[in-house]
Image 1 (cartoon, helix red, strand yellow):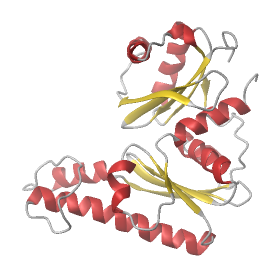
Image 2 (cartoon, one colour):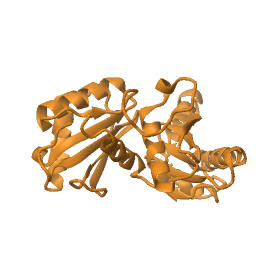
Image 3 (cartoon, one colour):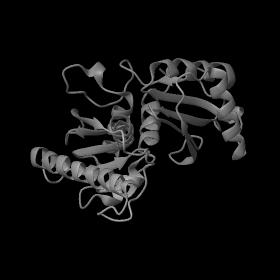
Length: 267
């Protein structure tokens, strides 16, 4: 995890099943200078990842030499190896990988701590660092996950449900007469076409799910819990959710990765 001097920037990478979200933090700072999303391709090689990274950095006047340290969390195991190989070859350092041996500063109070997804733990670390009290992170990705943190900063566990895009795909595959629909805002609650009816069902159906689950979590953990939404589909679904989400932060996972990197600096 060595750096290339005091001006070296930190690269943080969150590899999800559907999208990869990564960003660059200013040297030694807490500000994300730039961030990008692209589709996760499980067959990507380290060279392909390096080429994609180089092109996106160049769009903002950055280059490999500006990156002195990096960290990755991944829900796709084979891509962890490809990202670390990319960093070794093109960035000239070992990329830190979020995993069971990493120091997070957060006790994990579940039956098997190794089962916690890296992204879920990273989100929880970032959320607790922000509010310093009990909180829930709702991550709108391939799945919708609800991760709960105690007032003492302990990871308590969570809830996992299929995400909106999975539900759309399943509806198309299993219902012969229904069309394949892009996830988008419905024109109204009552659909005037099959497409609008499906979009309404997804938007308001998932809104109802989130509202119901968070209501139950507040009853169990206390009404004062802070609920933070993040993830690639938060911007589409959160507008339909009433009085349940306290904050929306698209950068929450990237911020958590920076925090965990700082807690493991020099190891």
